[in-house]
Image 1 (cartoon, rainbow, N blue to C red):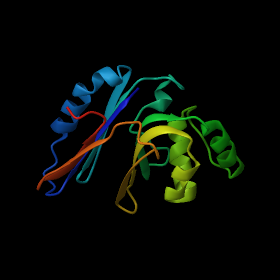
Image 2: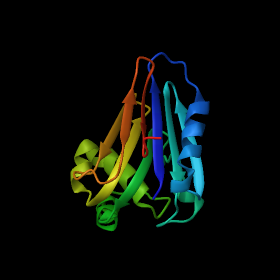
Image 3: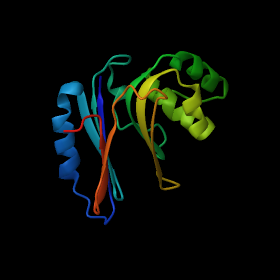
Image 4: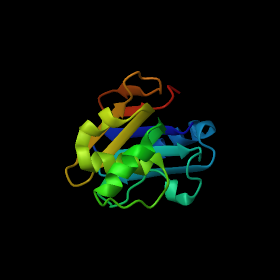
Amino acid sequence: MCGISGIVFKKNNVDNGKIITMNEILSHRGPDQSGYLEYKNILLGHVRLSVIDISDNGRQPMSNDGRFWIIFNGEIYNYLEIKEQLLQKNYKFYSKTDTEVILNAYKEWGIKCFEKFNGDWVIAILDKKKNTFIIARDQIGSKPCYIYEDECKIAFSSEIK
């Protein structure tokens, strides 16, 4: 299953205790690993249920270059096909996860990569160089992603709790 969460603080009053609490609330979705990333006014959280690659190489938030960071919940059924295309373009892989395939696909094709994915998913990707952040979900929307906004923050999570 896995669970993702994130907070974008509008007034830069970053409180990483909030993302830790969100991860704790989602821990039943991902009992194998938990982690978060703080970057400027953004916090990204993830709880992991290891399925495809059970090693620590699949830990999220994930980056393989320090620029792009991803949190992901779901499954990309055709990730091996996409991985083969990326290998032909000389991309390197450090895990056996569909998460890293998504990350490299985003580097190669930008938001067009989402059109290539066959599966059910919610993805959040941070680009530290461009200071951009994107949340996307599959065309059917079968994986949950709840979004909340008030005057101080925008928050999202795999569960409404």
